[in-house]
Amino acid sequence: MSNMRILLNDKTIERLSTPYHGRYIVRDTDLKGFFLMVGTRKKTFMIQADLRKRGKRVSTVRLALGDTRALSTRAARSLAKEYLAQISRGVHPKENERPTKASTAAGVDPVSGEVSTSITLKEAWARYRLAMERKKRSDRTIESYRDHVERIFVGWLDTTLRVLGEEPGLVAAKHDEVGKLHGPYIANGSMRTLRAIYNHARKIHRYLPSDNPVDSVDWNYEKRRNSGMGLSDLEKWFLQAAQLDNPLRREFHLFTLLSACRPAALKAVKITDLDLRRRTLHIPRPKGGADRAFDIPLSRQMIKCLIRAIRFGRQMYPYEAETWLFPADSATGHLVEHKEDRRVLSKWGNDLRQTYRTIATPAGVSELDARMLMNHSVPGVNAGYITRHKLLEDHLRVQQQAISDTMFAALGGLLQTNRKIQGWLQFGRSSV
Image (spheres, helix red, strand yellow):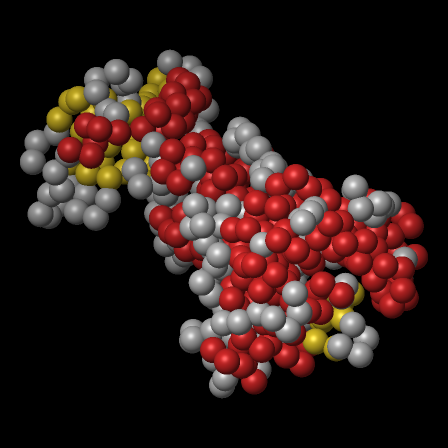
């Protein structure tokens, strides 16, 4: 196929056909020296220009800017203008990256087209994942990082970190692309993952640029969700929860409200983690991993909730209930999915954690006590001097009881007038 000339943009590039063999060039009509190399496997942005010294041509510089799967046309054009401007001034854009014999065996980077021995993103991720496992990071955290690397950055797995470090425009363009495809929160989150991997790799690979390429990103605005309920909203929520068909899920949501425990951690709690003598529930793997394990002090309402859950579990899933506090007919044997139709139950999950934190204030619980009950880190230099388990048996349990009492007081006369609420919350009268 003969060479072509068109105005390069994302739409025109997408329409270009792939040759059965060989490759062909598509030159940009707007920027001289900027073109696209179309091959059987990929389409690569390129530049070409004569490098001159004192008016005489020294050599022809031809460089790959990046694959169209990893770089938008807009970002490639911007990078091309920068490189072509350097060449016009007699400066090779990658003067300091001339390949050596040692690097020749390493192969060609799929994005830059340059020969390099730099560590790839795939290799850096493997090392960082091992470091996370050694630090006992939670499975959920590791899975989140893995998803970013192997799904969002799948086209960059064989790309060297050196290329990304020296061409931060690629990273900025990728952030924009991910934001359009997956939304602003995923775009920001994936970039935080890349930033962490790069920083970790540079501890050993000191040749990497000291400036993290993620610093080039213009972060998307992230609005903190404010979906918690106030005291006036609880009556409606309890009426909705009382209508749920599955009584075990109903108790799960209630305990999430009363404890502010993260759903992912609560699902994996075992019967053996409940200590009725000490009136505590042990959370072995909260957010942050096993090192953040803690005990939740139980109020009277929380104990009744868990006893109902145990009874329902034994009736509905007798085999799984021998192990799990919230059993289910699942591969794991415990509750896996906690989400409800918002039209059936308006608030669940993190909404209930926010509600707990909101109601702690009218319950008279201090900021410090609320953070400790929710297993949040305590800010300030005095945090290291607070021994949580010493406060657990008396002080924190009193604060927990105050929050539960305040929530139930918001029900008003429902406990006396509504049969659904009575059958659910009055101990010993619930039925499946």
